[in-house]
Image 1 (cartoon, rainbow, N blue to C red):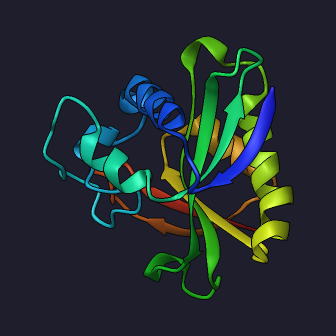
Image 2 (cartoon, one colour; image 1 turned 120 degrees about the vertical axis):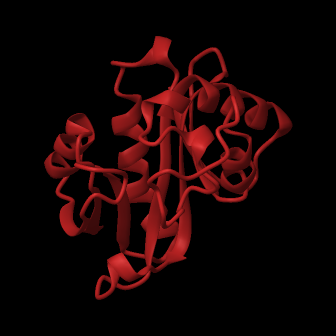
Length: 178
């Protein structure tokens, strides 16, 4: 397994494999990625066009920075995307950060520490390269696995947007200073 910070320097083969993984993971997000216009969309309840595939999301995401996990076979096993110098109203007071927008791992390769390795690269290598010590991200309040993982990694809750993704589903922002 190789974890590589690629920035925006993706090959066409990388892009094709990222698209495949993104489509595989589409319905694991709330709301699903195919219902979104972008990875940092502010309004998340009842939005999007409802296309069968996350085309609009991919088109916006592919312009972001990438960390790729390559399997021993050379195929992309998973990826993490982020935006540099990110700020938004919910993160007011946290300062500019590296904002993690999307993390996906091929279903058949899960349970092998790929997501952990992607986060480790983001928290240890990328801040050194880009000179930014703040990392932020968001998830939804019912995503217990991600909430637990972020807490375990030392991320602190920065903001909660009540019912932001629909009745009873909040958006929760997290931050980490490394």
